[in-house]
Length: 257
Image 1 (tube, rainbow, N blue to C red):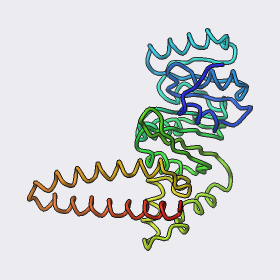
Image 2: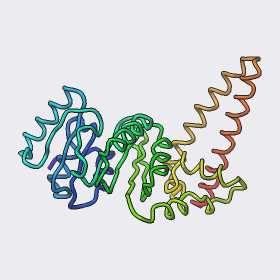
Image 3: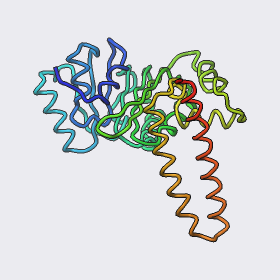
Image 4: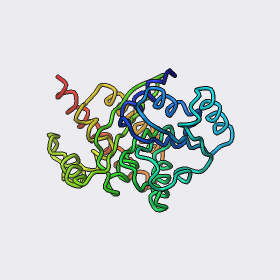
């Protein structure tokens, strides 16, 4: 059986057993091949836009003797799918804004009809993906954060279910955080940092946001060289952002201890 990276394995772990999976931006089709070899998925589609990875995915399917179960298609995003032919869609290894665009374009074209599960791994811009899921009525059932080869990744697991609105309202209410902020600010924080991730409060999450604070500090210091009123206003915004993240990290440390 093919061996996956830690990142891809986490995505595979979230995929429900016994369904039909479509991996969009599949590259070498490692994920769908694993899902079929392990018996977790009963059929798979690997979608890839570029010719090189598309051919590599076809070769991977042939080498694994899975061409009867794994169909490799060339196309842009969810355009490779027909409505109702898959249960789970996985998308990994791209920016959150692009991922959101792919999902929304596919939704408008009816490509998500019949899809009950999304497993998404944006490299950056996770908040854009969480916000889209919330706006479109998907329940964020779980999420995780992991480090591999010096990089930090987040994996989001969303489900389509009738009580998603009530579940999301509870998930994003922020009442578990001992912070004296208004409700909209708490919700924005949870969308940005991850409601499940904050509840878990792992050291990896703290490491990620420590690095983010360092980036914000550098930008704020660079703006100190400017005398423009706009720069002063932005410096204040960055400082307020840093202080809010620091508050959350302090809560996480207290919860762990």
